[in-house]
Length: 260
Image (tube, rainbow, N blue to C red; front, side, top):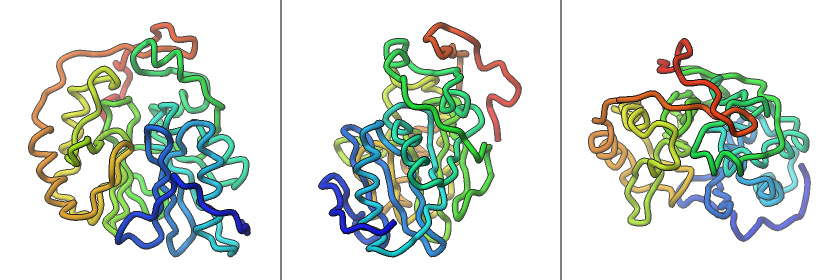
């Protein structure tokens, strides 16, 4: 993707992490990672964010023909998948997402979230080529299924570089501390807390959240503290899915809901 386009002002190199840029999309983060085998996009922001991500790609490739190997989506919400369809069309890179969120991403439902937010979640649908589950690998990443914010929320762990992309399963608050997403934006806040236990024991160089500033200093210690602090709540109740038209549809009694 050769271009002399300047990167968007919202795109910033992540300090101390070579080849990694964060694109701020109004309220959320997308990441562009240049790896030895090519480029990976982690989340794609709102639909209009695609333009900013393309500009960042042009900056990262510096005129070289570097393939985009994958578009990795952490969950189904609009501020993380809105630009996926256009970026897939531009790069022909395969889209990856967890199997529980794939129907929503492909535009056939079910959607999850507070009813009002669900009504605002219309987005260009995109075909998911790699339908993931806990423990899968995609490129250099290991997939952690961390349900709670949505049923199919995942984190992507680049073990060789110690990079943990958490989406909204673990965000960074205004005080710089890892925390869970707000309860009223999550499908099952108790399940989100339980999911934190899957991060126990990970050694990381950087915690790269879907919202808030990346943590690049003392990241392992901050992650361990967050797991200890947040991962103690037990799940108490089932929640409701919302179909493509925003009406209640099914609940997570489906086989494999609490996967992995």
